Length: 238
Image (cartoon, rainbow, N blue to C red; front, side, top):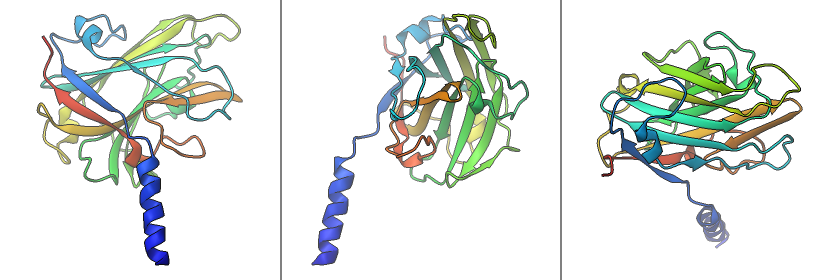
């Protein structure tokens, strides 16, 4: 009886958790130029995702982040628009710890039936990429490099000048499907992958992590693949 009660309580706890978010990734209606500006019509048609702030114990301003996703035969495209009154990005070389700067992230799991392996991209306001293969949400193989990734940022302000008033920055990234072929075929309409979309913002001690999907963790931790949001690939809407 005691075991049954524990099982019922555990099931009730899982049922009480909020569902992970779901997003329809639309096909592009034309070519995407990766310049950091998100000014193509396809971006206008992509639904916006506004990040949430799961941890109120973190200090610093709750600055708004909007993300959008698109796809075509060659790439997954992700665009970020970040409000930012003080843009700071010190890291300049690939695989530097860009998450210590003003940075955005995407973690991609092309095979949602498993959660042990996914791909991480962390990109600062300079459009410097830190990419890796993540195993068991603990081990980041940073010597793994994705092929053919294009990224660019556009800064509305002065980078690394403290004390002035910046407006924000945006970033675009194109990620070729070939990077995922060991785990999944290229997506077709109706296919579902999972992902985390995150932003690190501010300078210590006033620094925040905002996200698309709340990982339901007591501390600021984005590496919770069971709580990644769902991406549903769909055709362009007329």
